Amino acid sequence: MNEVAVNSVGDMSLLTLITGASLPVQVVMVILLITSLISWWYIFIKLATINRAEREAVEFEDAFWSGGDLNKLYESVTSGRRKPQGMSSIFEAGFKEFVRLKRQVGLEVSDITEGARRAMRAANNREMDGLDSHLPFLASVASVSPYIGLFGTVWGIMNAFRGLANMAQATLAHVAPGIAEALIATAIGLFAAIPAVIAYNRFAASVDRLAVRYESFMEEFTNILQRKS
Image (cartoon, rainbow, N blue to C red):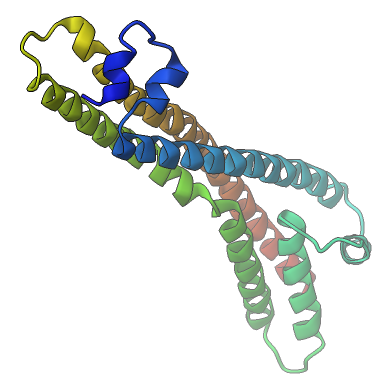
């Protein structure tokens, strides 16, 4: 057990335990804290991104199913300063391709609608890639952080018991600081993992719902384009 821990048997404050931990345990704590900060940053980003995508999907569906002219809807979608996103992006890609193919002579109805479907599929894949971004990192933090913390705990406990070998009479007061500082690594690992796993499960479910929503819209819009052609 290191000298700082032995001299601070009576001082069990969190700061003292962290500063008195051995260097490998401190490195583990720093890694976990940095990982936790990054994961929280991604959590806030994904929360804003998914909320915006859900809100835009509702607004676009209201406009789309209001019975207005599709040409006017296309103009309103493409005339904004911001590039269309989410369901608007899928609609913009499909309708643009539909208009382009319809102007060509000799194309069958199936060719026109299939071309529009492919354009919507490509736009949908881009949107899903954006929604899925950062989720693998959260999944990795959720699964790996407890083991990183456990490594720090094992190392700290091992170091504490090695220090007892040099003592003629070991008591709980001598070993307690070393074990306590080692267990902090596990606590920090859980602190990093629990929010990450909760956020990942929620965001993954939200992305799946949006994916189903986008797929349904593509099928319905394809049927509308087929009737129009």
